[in-house]
Image 1: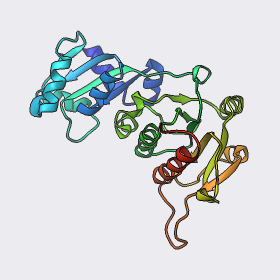
Image 2: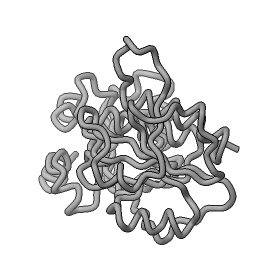
Image 3: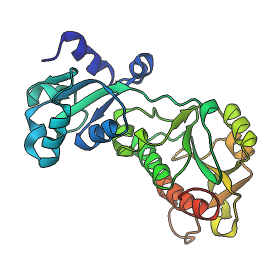
Image 4: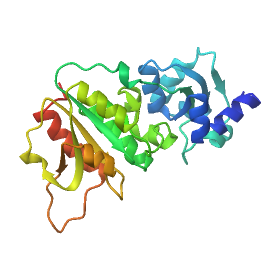
Length: 260
């Protein structure tokens, strides 16, 4: 059973200012809660309903959660009040936001960094984090004006990757200083850029992708060593930011630094 204060917290964490103020986020669904536990992110509160045990995977998760002091069992209709999805899977968890300070990031050998500059759609954000994780990026840098990394939709779209790869919220000047000090070249993704297959990037490269409509901001464009593009047919519509980033990261990590 949930206390009134726990119910209030669950409702408040749907809003960014409360997530930032309390340093907490919501993870919903079997896969996400599994990934959170696997990454060693300790839950502050877990809410489970009978629906959790409708599947074998759900039953295995229920067994993992059974001994937790922070577990609260409720009816399906109660959990649905706090869920962000139309068909809740019977589990949601509250945990502390993983904080990563840029100054504490250490890299060795070839490496790639993904920089998000004004990405607004939570689905795109999560897919970008998932892509960076898949290609072995050292971390994801989130610049001001970008969607909240810990928006429930962002977390859900990242499919657990947000617990494996560091997400660093920083400003451009601080990031540029770090990249320079660690020998990274900054590239920007832009439709008018140089075809990526013509470029031989260095062993350490950072790729910046911008807003879905406006693209990269002027400051990031000015700071980039070069703008890169995915070659596509002239009559084709531009690629979604997450799709373009996936192609660019694939090539950068194989000609520069990344997957090992």
